[in-house]
Amino acid sequence: MPRTTAKKATKTTHRNSQARHKSTTKRGGRRWSKHVTETSNAMDLRGGVFKLRDPKKIAASLKRSAERSHRRKANPYRSALSMLTFYINRAGKNLPASRKKVLNRAKDELKAQFHED
Image: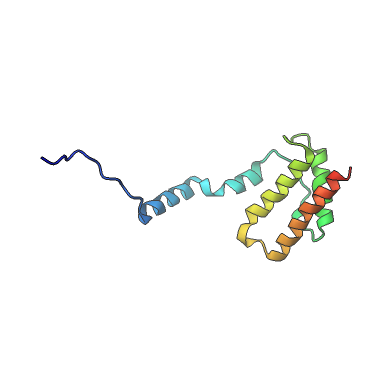
């Protein structure tokens, strides 16, 4: 007599994964970085700091903001580097290579500015 109570292993189909994706979008789960950017209590940055073309100016502005902030959780260097990394990651594939190059140089400059003290 065959057992009929055994369950078959279920496979996730493409259709199921799409349904999960759509429901996440409706709830706002895909826009978490926008929410963080708008409501973060981390640091106040000067407007347009990431649009500057000089890595030294970007690093100096981030350093100044991090040192003046009393709301940060980590040390000023870590907070400034986190803000820069967050911006680069949030831009993702939409960030042109030239901008990414400048921002990555700003990371190196930030390290130099903080560790020369």
